[in-house]
Length: 204
Image 1: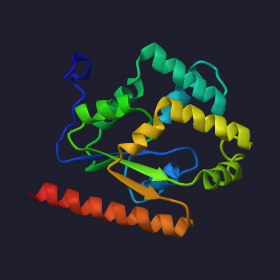
Image 2 (image 1 turned 120 degrees about the vertical axis):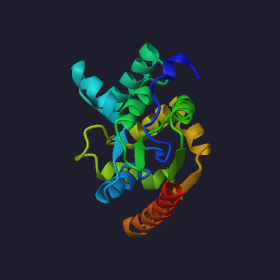
Image 3 (image 1 turned 90 degrees about the horizontal axis):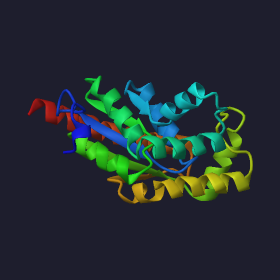
């Protein structure tokens, strides 16, 4: 283990940490919102970039945040957000914790080195379905895009960072191309299975 990783271990090994990845509009936020509503803690990696944008006086648009993310990674290392995330996880003693927004293989590698039981799930939805969702919510989120061209550019940026590669490494892929009700059922089933597993781990 690298020296920079020291002191980042979890309080307990009987804890499952689940990273959530996917392209814009796939349903990552919906997944974590469902988890939150059921009492599970969620760490949003993008919040670290939004906080940095606020510190630097940068308007949090999709384009600005994307540029800042590249800049911060270049300045502080590819795993800078992963380090901040693990520090946040370390303060929790919850049996199950979710991480929203895993984007690079470096982050996945860092999490696997520092989290005793790290899992990765990918949320998938077709391109046109994702665009409709992103376009529909554009007035609610300042960091969303308002045209097909900007949507495609954002996708390209996400793929350039490594989201596609990360999705290919997922332990599980949940498809989200249908109704919200259907997706909620899939998420709740996954959470139920996870709960059963953690109960078994803690009793053994």
